[in-house]
Image (cartoon, rainbow, N blue to C red):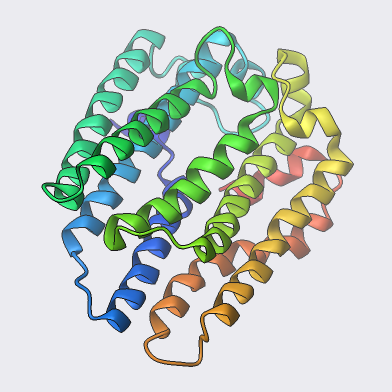
Length: 288
């Protein structure tokens, strides 16, 4: 059981949950001002769905990199992954991926039923499509003949699903409306998620080169990836300030917004520390 818990990489959960929480509490703040209702059941189910998606993604990544031999070159460089180290067999991990894909879909249906049935049938079916796309994206990063993570496209998918879909989708579940200014916090969270992925890819840049995993960090080189990382860590704070300014953050019940914005600040402290890094392997300490 310990090996399965380690393979789930629970430390990755806070960032993935932050987008859902941000969208939910911005919705709560707006619904409070409009006299609308805000349902805790939607938040609870949305967090469960995100938890399952993240574990699915981590198991799929472990399986995909393990069967391709990518992780075998990393065992002495960073954390030993379950399939590559032999602690969990490839067949067992594949079965776990199938199980969590099924659980993710069931939980998604439950969430959408609570949020949209019976008054929002069109939205119900649209979000089912988003849910299926999210499950496929979670698996397709390293699994399959042409995994997008091996083509340097991981950053784009992380931005879309962990940023825009997470924040804007969460907001829509509560309000049943789309607001263009939600693209600001959605982009902020997406860039923070990209920063974590890029940090991971910078750490593994040498072993990825040997194994043929052509990540975006490998494509642009370590120094350029470092500059890219600084941009990803700094712009989100500017975007959040813009969002707060647009919405008159000194008025009404805006403290809800401030509560969720706190989720962004822990990652910002990485800026100063990462700038001092000279070798890719030194980045491992910031991924634990």
